[in-house]
Amino acid sequence: MDYPLLCIDLDKIEHNAKVMVALCAAHGIKVSGVTKVVCGHPAVAAAMLRGGVDGIADSRLENILRMRAAGLDVSYLLLRLPSLSRVDEVIDCADISLNSELQTLQALSDSARSRGKSHQVIMMIDLGDLREGVWPDLAVERSKMLMQWQGIQLKGIGANLACFGGLTPTHDNMLQLAELAAEIEQACAIRLQWISGINSSGLNLIAEGGMPERINHARIGEGILLGRETTRREAWPNTYQDAFVLQAEVVELKRKPSAFPGEHGEDAFGGHPHFDDHGDILHALVNIGRQDVAVEGITPQQPVTIIGASSDYLGLDVSALSGRIQLGDILSFDVNYAALLAAMTSVYVKKNCIRGTLFDDRIFCA
Ligand SMILES: *Cc1c(COP(=O)(O)O)cnc(C)c1O
Image (tube, rainbow, N blue to C red):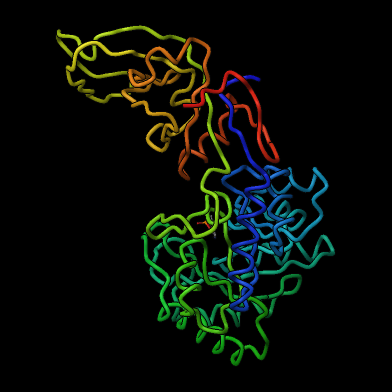
């Protein structure tokens, strides 16, 4: 096995997906599994689909193409607003996309018509998170405009919260979305198929029974992959938080002082590290660094302390493992969303999908 390695337990992801899908189904909500944080990894998408998600959503065309090329023939929702410069690719590769700009919608319409295709659209409404979406008082007028264009079909409206502004989904703002849907339906004489209210930040609202009835679609990434709702990052009941485990190899192991006197300036990243002096420690370097992962988002599974990181190394105080740890051992780390995103994106971190347990006798079991 080659390290650093991100170990991906597909059975845990499938299990988490089942839990999310069952929760949502009990409240009349369909789930799109969001794969952007895993760069559209086909095996992860397949695990989500085994867990019962209704389709796959991703922010990047490259990821959707990757999954299609792997033979996953499902419906794909493009999450990031299409760029004007890539509308043809959007029409070719996504079945449905989130949108907020009339000019882009017109370009999608032109492209769809010239390619003899039909493309589905969800119009995003900004309920105050200040990321994407038209302001609510313009939603009806904008919907009427895009109704005139051929090649695109208004399938629903949606909102994304708890992302830029950290605004939490509530019964009130979800009701505002549902009421807007009714207004648009009346003004345009259509029925909207999807009212796509939430991401993983809405799980509590669903579980409490606070979601208005019309909200019938959720786009869930973190809840499935890391088993957490995202307003307080609490572990969701009966899910795994460790479907992804990052592993790295000890490449130096020595007794060293915990601090060293002398003039100190900036470190390699412009930081000003401070080391408390508590005598000699057993000091380890493992072969993972800032080029591989968001170091602040990893938590060691062993009783060791992270004391620093550079591009290529993580420095650890492993004194608690004295006498039990040796050069070449593998240490394991839990990851948060930011760390998972970076580790999946880094070409230097190998990815290994397992179903059940992996055995490598160098993996340190404390
Ligand atoms: C990333 C994203 C999601 C998924 O968010 P999670 O918190 O991972 O569930 C949902 N909707 C949109 C528009 C996104 O960009």
